[in-house]
Amino acid sequence: MKKELKVVDIESGEIIEKLQFDGGYNIIFTNLSDGGNLRKIRKLDNARFGDRHWIKNYQYRPIALRLVDKFNELNYIDPFQILFIEDMEWQPGTAKNPWIARIKIANKEMKDMLGYEYILEVRNYYIDRMQREQIIALIYHELRHIDKDGALINHNIEDWSNLVATLGKDWATTQAKIKDILDEGFEEWDELDSVAKQLNMFSQLKAVK
Image 1: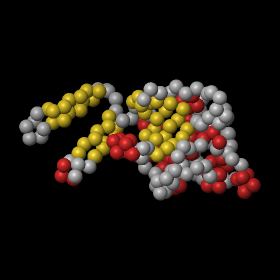
Image 2: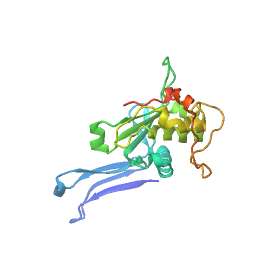
Image 3: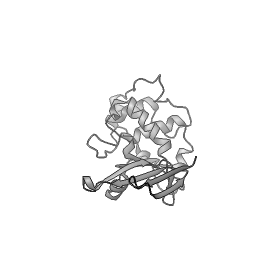
Image 4: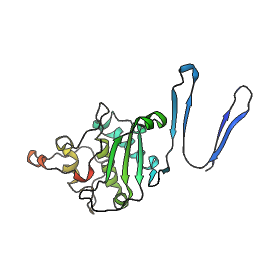
């Protein structure tokens, strides 16, 4: 569907800018009356991001919104502050523990210009091999890295034992079907026994701070 964006002088009716496109968009504008602060409208849901990545807000943000709405431990997170991108080119190499997904804090320039606080990156190589239920669990896992104060936290088996106990320690790589944590019938997490909490279950899914 083609869209048209027009910038019109309200007083004269003159069209100052006119742009036709069939993708998403971000708009940044200012008002001199409020000191020239940048105001942002973020609608960039599907676009190339550099040489290797694509913005995939349209795919992952709806999942994040449903997770935040369902689980109290995520209810302070705003998925609209996260830029979801996917590396379309990465292939396995010699790394011992290649990550599947990671979340990091956006740099100051990206925050100022695009308005995103975080970047959540996944690798298409893995996503293409995962079931829908695994992708949902993956997004949940990455959202848990965001602390209530806005900082990023590392994996904590004491806090995240529910994920492993409910879905199994191989939930991200298993070929077997796992539970859909967004299913209406899914109500509560299982918990690990205390002895099992000493295990490090998250080596492939580490965050980058």
